[in-house]
Length: 309
Image 1 (cartoon, rainbow, N blue to C red):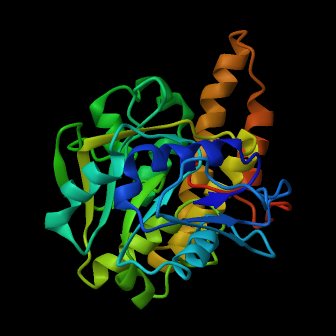
Image 2 (image 1 turned 180 degrees about the horizontal axis):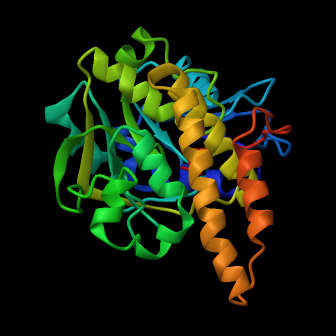
């Protein structure tokens, strides 16, 4: 479990895990990713169990993938759960996920992840394409995203529903069960991804060696998400991550060109709305969107977790 920021959520998650899942757990590893508020050195779970509890401290904040790599290097099991700190787990979560996962190993598996309101966070997704990203970038389409067609158009796998278990292209990284040996055999997460797309890249590489990704809709967790940083920085990180992904698996220049064209399309619609008296600065929005697509990198990138996908 990566830690960055306030440790209270993570402490609560550890206690929650041990309350009903200790018999399924050999180790719990917290990776302090050079957090400005360190995970307390003397803290130990109040619940006693045979589960080994360890805190590993990194010297530099390397982001989600680097933190998970550090954690995987300290465990002694064939399967590992990677959990965001801001999850709310159901009763007997680990046992239920283990039972559902058993027929599929080795595989990457994720339960259905919802918000605290119960709305799906679209755990199962298709491998990214330029079309997915352009559709998502076109802000006038946002009002239609409750339609199934638009969800598919931005890369959500709408076949995945609670109660179903099925192979998909990739699963959201808030709560993942990983086959440790397979992950290590391909070099783990790519450290060049700071935030976003690192779990997509990992699952793409695992697929190449025959390890599938499985959506487990029979188990559900709630995810708060998005609390570690401001929206503008999260969007900048997302664009950077997708550019990095395109460098490895696609055409980064084509992606940038397509998103730039989509920004000017957004500008056209926003300008009409501005002229009609709506409270929007069309030129300002265009300038901000183009800044995300520039080659400049965000300065301080301190955040941890997969909660910004």
